[in-house]
Image 1 (cartoon, rainbow, N blue to C red):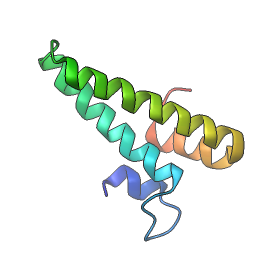
Image 2: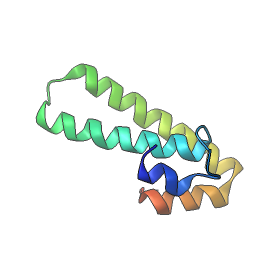
Image 3: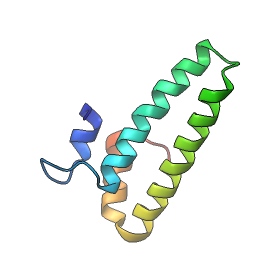
Amino acid sequence: MNKKAKEVAIHEKDTGSTEIQVALLTDKIQNLSGHLKKFSKDRHSSVGLLKAVNKRKKLLDYLKKNKIESYKDVISKLKLRK
C-alpha cells in the first residue's frame, strides 16, 4: 500500500474500502499519465488509463452520494479537482 492510501485508510488493516480504492487508482492514473507522455502511441495503456479514470469517477460519485465527509476528506488529501 502506498503513502497516499495509508493517509485515507479508515483503520490500520484497511485494504478494500472505497477511499483506498480511489487512492490506489489515483496512483495508477498518475503512473499511466507519465508513461503516455513518453509513449503517446501506446493505445493499450491509453485504454487502461481511461478505464481507471472512469472507475475512480464512479467511486467518487458513490462517496459523494453516501459519505459526503469521507468524500471531502479524500478529495483534499489526494489533491483532486472537483
